[in-house]
Length: 388
Image (cartoon, rainbow, N blue to C red; front, top):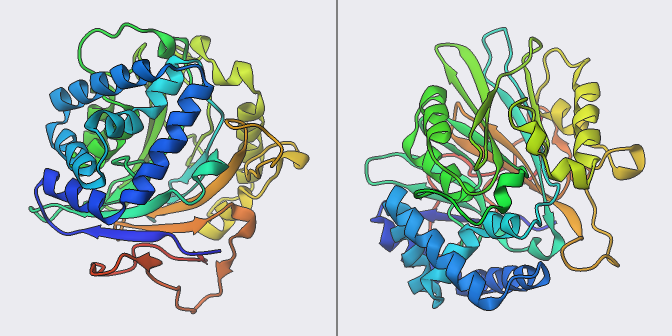
């Protein structure tokens, strides 16, 4: 399986950073746009509606995250697409949610050891198989020395990631009845933009919780956050929705699990994904069962916990049915772990069933496919394989 592309953006102004990304990957960004434009149409969106929603999204991003609005504008200029189309990519969750098209995807497990060790984390990213080759790992260097590493789709500013200040973020889409409301009072951020903003601005779990819970959104997601401060692993999930946020803490066993339904009692009555497809509940129960005997898991143990297929009762590791129509071909596109102590990602392209731990003492393959004329910063941006 080929390694993901790793793109390093050296310190630059946001608009210039976006411009360079757009120039580096115009074909991939346009291909991402074509896929989502077709998906929007399949879900029932008219072309003029997508244009209007993209313009609205860009207006709201400009109000709440002007640096990321400038980055989006730069991506548009570099790729030759109109800014509203890049904004619509970044608001793809909001557009699909407005159309009632949230889908089950992603399973996250974080363990906070009680022995003073750092958090151990892994998640699957399940999405449409048409996006199998349309994602990459982006290293963003800020002029003040901050570094953000995120796995994201071409044209979208962020998703799963970690920063050099010790904060990690896992990402699960949720669905709530309020996602389908056409009216939102005041500016809001697309959830993918919010994820990147948290990684850009926050250094600690407390800062990240405050920003995520204090930012209005127009679609629902779970942002699972973790850090390692003064010899203590910490984690929390912020469930965001247009109806408001909620906070989920790890259990007494140190585990914080999430799939694609609300866990908060004040938000679960508005649940939509679970009512459409109970697999999110089956996956959550499977994670509970498979992590229960693991008192001190490493990343290899969490990888094994996620290696469960639909035929076994829960699609923690998902494989697409080739005969399914567009919009229903789900696949685990990547399996991701975060190391908040080094600020790096471990990424396996594909599901946990195809990832294999690297034997103890072996040197992991570093880098992946690094874009020409760009060099990586210190350390590996990803491991192609899975450190044990």
